Image (cartoon, rainbow, N blue to C red; front, side, top):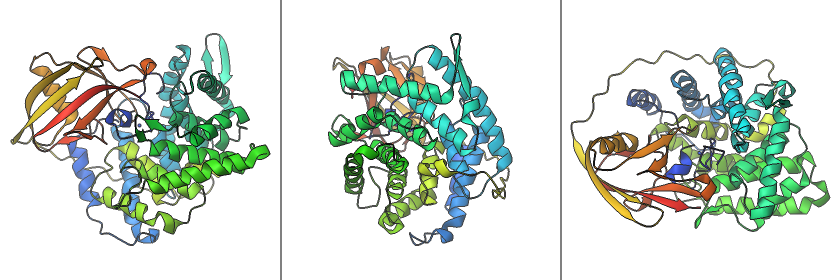
Length: 456
């Protein structure tokens, strides 16, 4: 977790099976916007997995979802969205340029403040680096002034990676997590910066010893990001003195990704499949090997599973048979500027008159449990439901923090889930871990939500 960001990283990030990781790894969008997306996507029929040409309308719709998200954006501009738009085959260069300027001002200033406060921000810094690189921006001109010293973005990224590496040597885990560590390796590599062997070795050893876990669950997102990072390192030749180690790690990562594939084609879950497919393509897998997973993402896209822009930003490159490694060779000449965004027609959505019963159990770090109940309108987000429960004045309180995935729980009933203590709020519905964030998960029927302060 980068500073105030959860481990899925502002990037996204490392979803695991826990909602709190998803929320780094959400901006708030109204139900009105969701209905607009549903209307557009459900118009498209299924098509054969490998025929990307026949899916051009679906891809176009996903690109427009991301462009609309730039208009609706709350909080910090999202570098992952920018990266996905820049890796697309068609563009709205004017909107991308405006967003790039927001990244260089708003996000840049936020990162500078985090660096000034000695917060570990390697994941967000890495995404910012790749977003700039995808726009062919001269990274040497981007500097941060911390204290009285001004240094380039790349220098700060390398320093962040050194701090992460040293923490692994001392405590056998990064300051943040291996998802962000992998993202840092990837960002350095695609930017043409030689990755220190000691840095890449830490990632190789983590793969070897299967350290990409939260509790008992393996993080497919992390395996995917590590795969892209090590593939880039291999292709750069910076680890040439021991290429066999890299190959062994890449083979294991590929095995882990393929072994995670469910009967419906998803690898890990719906929200880790995009990165997993990107990694497999980057590591040399044929499109046919990923066909079932790509079709699973298309089906989800048509049913509006990916209404969160962060999720769309991770599946769009994969559905276009690309990975983040493409940033390394990105050229910004003669680009197709044909992507036109039509204004979204406003739609009034009235709250549901149907109420459903919601029980909320809060389990503190010491194991003490408290149970609350509230009736909420059917279709309410979990965030809206928690707000209603808080308003009942029954002793339930909570706080949220923002992330690239939207709001995530930071405190419940006065108890923090602190990164420094390796803790987070694990959310489950009827004992099944949530795969969506609190602003995305909808309450459609009576159920029990458990919020548990958990270590990872």
